[in-house]
Image (cartoon, rainbow, N blue to C red; front, top):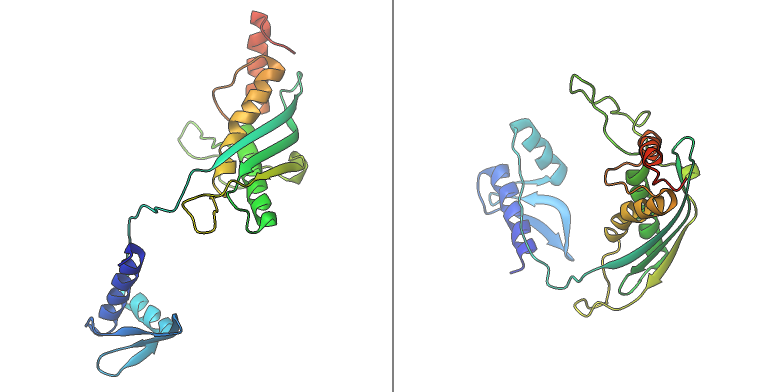
Length: 228
C-alpha cells in the first residue's frame, strides 16, 4: 500500500474514532471523492463540517503524517545571468537585465513554467539586495511589517527573460522536472557575482543593501582595490 494512502487511511480512522469512539466508521466515497458525510457503525451520520465543529468543541486534534522518498523525481538544473548597475556614491544596486535558463524536463504548461521561473528570480533578487531582519539592542524585531521589511516591487525589477530547456526526466511518466524551487537558488550568487565584477568587491554576506555596499566600497577604495 502506498505510504500516502496509508497515512490518509490512518487519518480517516482517527476522525472516525473521535466521532463515535469506534474505528468502524467510514468516510463515504463515491467516484473516488469524499461525499461530505461521515457514517458511524451505529447508523449515525454527520457532515465533515459537523465533525470538525464537534472536534473543535472537544479540543480534539487530528493529524497524520508520512515520510517517503519519491522514486520518480529527478534533479533540476538552471543557469542564471544577471546584469547590474552599482551607484558608486550611494551603493545602490539595480538589476537592469536578468535571464533565467532552466531544464523543465517537459514543460506541460510553458507559461506556468515561465511564471515559476520569474517568481523565483523576483524573490531571489529580494533576498540578494534588500530582505533582512533587523533586531534592536533589546532583541526585538524592528521590521516585522512590510512597511519596513523591504521586498522588491515591480519598479525594482527588470523584465525577467526565461529560456526553457526540455530534457525529459526518464524517471517520470511525463518527463517533467520540478520547476518551482530551483529558480530561487541561483539569483543570490548571480547578483553577487555581477556586483563583484562591477565593483571589485566580493560580498559573502547578504543582503547587498546600499549601506553595506557603500561601506565595502569605501574600504576597497582605501586599499586601492575598488573598480569604481
